[in-house]
Image (spheres, helix red, strand yellow):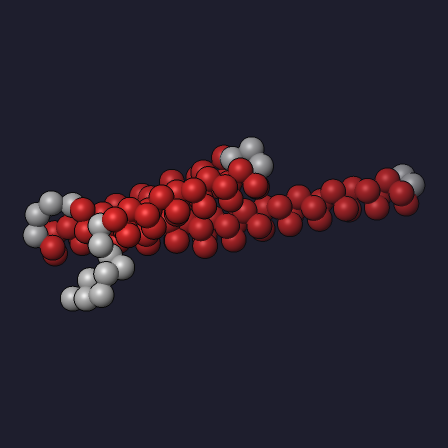
Length: 108
């Protein structure tokens, strides 16, 4: 094999590894962000006692993070995965704002 072919294969393998590493980082960081936002929103909007709502929201956050990680690897392109997670995070942030999470004294 020529040196040019070996170089092209090495470059393709390196590019592929970088793409997978980027998706792993996005799945971890983006999945955590979406799960944390969803957990906060669910804790505020679920009916019932506050402790039960927080517990249910925390349990649901594990499934939400897993779904976000699956989404990152199922998306056709990396930009589509970023866009999808960003859109969900933005919607959850708006939901938290509407639920009053950013009001002074909301944590009390």
